[in-house]
Amino acid sequence: MRHLAELLSPGAVTAGFAVAGKKPLFQHLATVAAREYGLDAQIVLERLTERERLGSTGFGNGIAIPHGKIVGLNQIVAVFVHLDQPIDFQAIDDLPVDLVFCLLSPPDAGADHLKALALVSRWLRDPGFVAKLRGAGSSDAAMAIIAGAQVRDAA
Figure 1 (cartoon, one colour):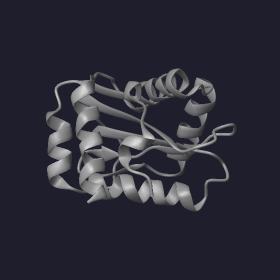
Figure 2 (cartoon, rainbow, N blue to C red):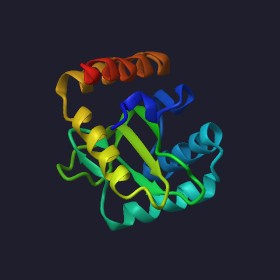
Figure 3 (cartoon, helix red, strand yellow):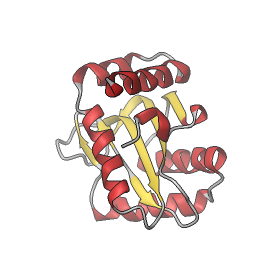
Figure 4 (cartoon, rainbow, N blue to C red):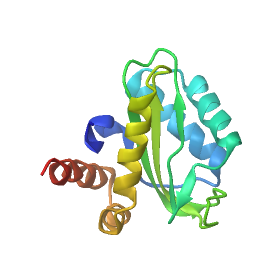
């Protein structure tokens, strides 16, 4: 399985971002995915919204992993956002969300999509890693923390 940093282009990491709710957050995720990975922002927004209608992707502790399958994508990619203020996400523990790791996969990714979700959720369940991400003062710092996770994971 690939490491977290391999899922992200450096420009797909945003720290200190302010939004008022899920809809503008998903619009930001779609815009970044379009810019960084050449995707259609409207399609990304539709897929994330469709998936969220099935149930919240907020899995607890202030963390969400919205995800979707995108036609035309040839590999799994991600967008990471650290919100400056947590937003309501209807998460399983009812806590507002401030860390968002969005995964986008090709429609036929199947097992690889599930492995990527498992990799992200495993790292985001690590209290030390999560604390470092929350303490990152910039997008570059957040990317460095994510890249550092690759080193530890490889050991």
